[in-house]
Image (tube, rainbow, N blue to C red; front, side):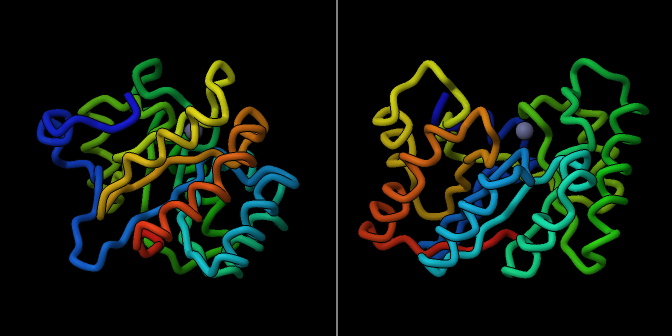
Length: 207
Ligand SMILES: [Zn+2]
């Protein structure tokens, strides 16, 4: 499912799937970093293209690579919480899940005290109770409209790029600054940006 159908957005209306606006804005997001070299490569591309994006970081990776995490912040991008251990909400108790979200948040706060409270559930798998509890902590839960599927080793580079072309105004696009996605990402990201700019879209970070 590359583009999320309207009925899913309606059922899970408490979660953010896209950000309607009148300025043709779209939102690039990068999950699962910080990852050495890959995150830095993404930062270079974004700087060159003058784009602000949103990074949903894994707490454990922030702990391992604080210097890369700092680079994301210093470049002016938004930061979101992606749990400490990349947990699948459907597989763990709400108590354990919430504790993992807190752990990630503590890691983010060590280096970035002022930030919007954004959360993205790993794999998009979160129970309604977990979703509610996290929103009660003041988080906005950011899902997506367009999945590049860059993590999918079975798809071709061309297919990955094709997926991003279904973007519409307000779309939230998902990429991954991870080892698994590296090959597809390196091919797709620069070409997707070029295509989307030509289509007249404007890039913004989520706040
Ligand atoms: Zn993830």
